[in-house]
Image (tube, rainbow, N blue to C red; front, side, top):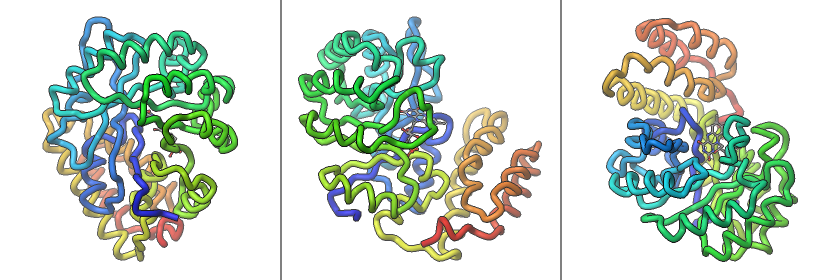
Length: 322
Ligand SMILES: Cc1cc2nc3c(=O)[nH]c(=O)nc-3n(C[C@H](O)[C@H](O)[C@H](O)COP(=O)(O)O)c2cc1C
């Protein structure tokens, strides 16, 4: 059961959990204590994506947001961390969980997990030089849940307190079940209690997992908080009937649309951005397939807004109400 000392973290989902989504969520359903922004990729040239940097801008975020970096190079990590520091960011996260072969085969993300020697060197040097507090997000392994057991002594020795474990293997991508036994095996090995992540889809999933792991205080939730933006607040005990849910979702959507359309060159990517959000938002509605089909078909902003007016009137699924 949710307790006052629990901390709920909105997970990073690339292309979706940007400051626009985070702030609109905070201004409506609420429920997230903090968030990690999706990873920024570093390059040898030092060039960093402007929009991704902007996403972590302290003044743009209504909830504390950690910036995430995907790299295997110490200098590139430090270079990006310094940029984030200038933007007012307090904490940076090293991504050691990304499962995509394009990333992992280049010894980045979950690909690092097969090389504990490299991880030790990377983390030790980053810890020494990082101008911001360092946190790490990891999977149990890339191929096997035993890989994390070689990483944990490094995390302990470096005194990294903010450590999130997504209880899957890299080779699973985002499929299959989470390995709660594998997660449990890590607990006695860790100096600090980690943040749990993976497949909390409903308030009762949270009840069950938090009952099994009463020592865990930090919980990270990703996809399900996008498919049901009320989920984080429902976990905290908030209740929603259809009318209250619809009113808040309409407000959330309006805030997001307005912010996207106020940005420079907004019109060029507005539809694409909103379609990515609707890949999750569609699940709010009983007839999610019909809703998403119409959204995908909309070719202009006017057409899209007409479809949204229709969609926001559709019946809301009992699965997101409580
Ligand atoms: C499309 C997509 C993009 C993701 N992008 C990131 C990312 O940028 N950084 C990261 O650490 N994890 C990323 N993740 C992983 C999530 O943060 C989270 O660990 C995973 O979805 C499991 O949690 P969940 O079951 O609550 O969604 C991504 C996941 C998905 C499905």
